[in-house]
Length: 183
Ligand SMILES: [Cu+2]
Image (tube, rainbow, N blue to C red):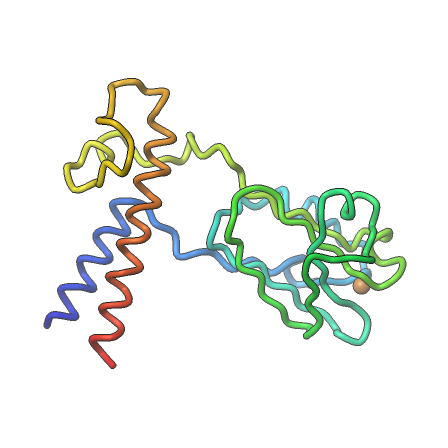
């Protein structure tokens, strides 16, 4: 019963603060990660709205391809000499943990040049998707380290982000408690 209550509380909190569990995106959709068919990965990425927590899935034949996370400069020049991370199982998942760009390319010679590269961009400006002011005005939202909220709407996006961040921590804690309660 206690678990049920916790679970309901968790769901209510998630709904209230529009917490996303993360969406799984398979790069290239049915084509996967390949040089065959001239998949336009730029176009593929452009049709998605990536968020922190999303999972980027690369599916490919590991005999012919790999996945390297690289810097912007390396992405532009298709430089695979010093990748930040390398994946090569043929079924690799990358969990987006930060906002901004996440650049990937295939390190097999010629493949990046042929277009096997993708830029996963998580927009830094979330003002259009921030929680509503009414949610922010809730007395249950910790004020964090900032001074008392003002009526300025300019501060709303930042406050929304901070509040969301704090709530996310709370949710994780609740989740851990729930899980440990079952075990
Ligand atoms: Cu390749």
